[in-house]
Amino acid sequence: MKNRWNILSGVLAAALLFSSCDHFFDVDLKDAVEEDEIYKSYTDLNAVAYSFYAALSPEAHKFLLWGSARGDMVTNGSDEDAYVTQFVNNDVTADNPYTNYAFLYKAIARCNQQLANLYKVQPNEFASQQYLDQFYGEAYFVRAFCYFWLVRTFKDFPLVEEDVANTVTYISGEGDTIRARTLSLSNEDIRSIALQPAEEQDVWALIQSDLNRALELVRATPQWTVEGYTQEAGLDKIRPTPTSISLLAAEVAMWLGQ
Image 1: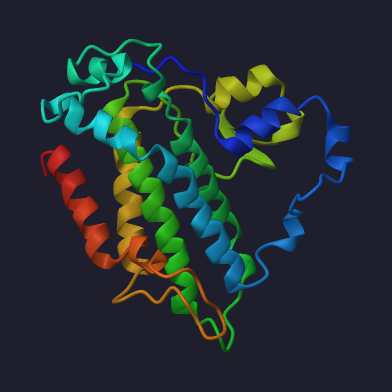
Image 2 (image 1 turned 135 degrees about the vertical axis):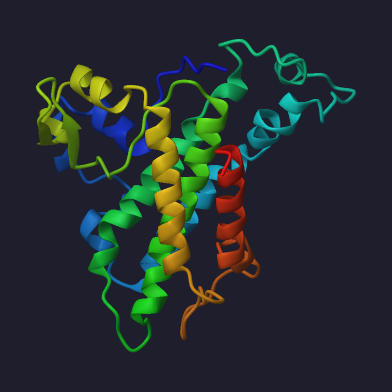
């Protein structure tokens, strides 16, 4: 299922669209959240974490198509969808809309943002370091989950390991590591850096590294709420635990013959 869509994460797409319009960033957008207005407290960490799942939830049916439907475990219902039938018949074309993996990169971009900015929230009497650590672990876990689906499903896709809203790191043709402001790059530069296909072994290495970090950081029974903060009932049940992280790590190990 070689993917032929040129898809960027939400953050990278914004940078690409406006890379030639610096004045855009001087405009106060309605309902926009300024960067310096977030990452001030543990409630901000929860808000960003929820955005991981907000990106994934509407597209969850694709996991069924990319997995079970391709393994002769699914049949079409009465209202047949020609593109779903392609998955059931294991004959997927490049124009099939269910091959669009943009939602995974939205979640990955938000995980990268969380990992890059978590340090701004310091422990206090309400939120211990162990409480804050689990947010690191959650971001590593969700990022690993997204890349696991990418590497097991698609032949070519980019590997984005950092928050590229402001700066991007890449290897030049001469083999030097370059770090540059995203807005200083042309559209062509951004595409060549961010959309170059990843080496499969590098993706598996990142997945295993992220899962190992998640297991170290999400300890015992995670507490996703602290005194004075409430969340919708049941939201804590979709968030990672050592058991769920271990289950994904075990599945990755089976895929790698370990």
